[in-house]
Image (cartoon, rainbow, N blue to C red; front, side, top):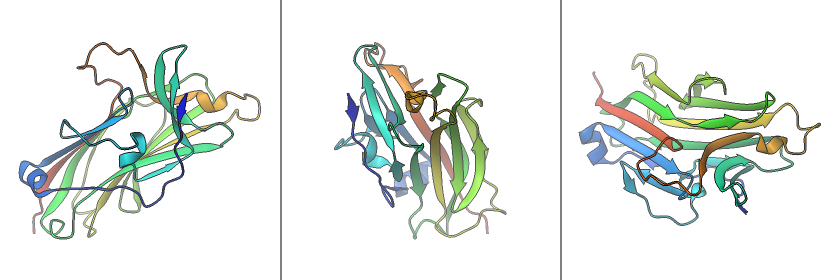
Length: 207
């Protein structure tokens, strides 16, 4: 069983609200088992699940293996790459006074052969800041330098790209790189190890 996810561009953006500016923090999570998003630990309204809150999504599916009782995200079959991203941004009234400071991301991934490639990119605006390979830890942190990144309407975009160098030799290569893999019979509600998590601290700009 799989959830059909079409190509999406210019999609959803998490706009920072005033309460988050006051508290200095925003947290975005996605639970692949329940197919739900959480903002600051509060469950978001669910319509279509995964695609509800993505900024862009191309050739990515949420796959449920009923025989193995597992769920995960993967490339769609017969596609050379799968790309998915999420975005967070200040609105025009907030941006002159606030900025992002610390960005911490958890993106659990699993590779089942040496050919599967999972790369994560963190962007500020159109500038690529961090490019982390599949062999890196699933959690990473970035400190935003105000002197380098003072662009108006600065947007955080977190992108994941799934590919394989063995597509021509393995009909199942699309399945060898997975995100957020977890048992659909997950017992503990306190287990967030399979979650996508994007945490960002917010501070006032210094003039």
